[in-house]
Length: 371
Image (cartoon, rainbow, N blue to C red):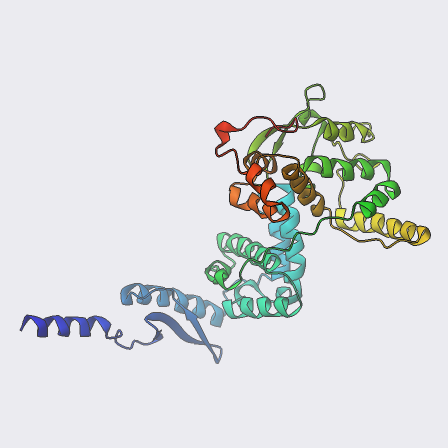
């Protein structure tokens, strides 16, 4: 009798909820199904609870009623993006705003003509598919979806729509793919330094000597952040934390070599004193000059990225006997597992030496530089 009752209870538990108007069920998840101006709309309610489903479908119906009567906001993606940008995008970091701005330009190609309430999870999926087919990296696509999510949250706060489908969109379907590390050709690097302006030459050499990130660390570095006597630099990390670092003599030499622009707080500045911008484009020009030099001299120029100089710094540091834990601190990695990607470029003996120090408390200065 008890077994029969248990089976009956289990059977009831597995039974799908009773059908209700405007609610359908798939794999135990509730979906709203309504009609707006003759068009069927179907969207997940993100719940398996019938009571919660009824509450959420009422919200969807209320919004649909507003659509039918023209009460829904007619704000377009382009207008919302402009307002969001003018409001500062909800972040303090200029580098983050620049990143979001780049994503918005790409998002406009798909969503620009749409009204904000017309952006659905299906359209977001179509955008992702289009970007993938265009050969865009997964990391870039994820950044685009993050920017869209922040914009949609802004729109919810301003009553331009009542939900954020980008936040609900399953980003686990976009797997992170780490780009392979390529060590720069030093002959090509030297050609770039020779062909660059004095400011850019100092920047290139500083990146290789310090391992600093370009946009977050080096290009944003201001003179008051540098103690020119001790070599200690205070700066804000990619994650927004304040940290200090003692630079080695070579890195400091290249900082001092950067031409001083009167009235500018930036170490690496434009002629008018502004912060260096359009860095990728500017470096393309430097590489083009270096390539022409190589052609004149009869050798093959091998292009490299500015971020490759950070990788080269890390590999040289470990090959020179540095600790993987010290390097983690220098590069600002939150986990040593991230730093361990550079062990692939070391011999077995070099790996053993890099891992010899087993905790930050055991680390002593190697190579004259501290985190």
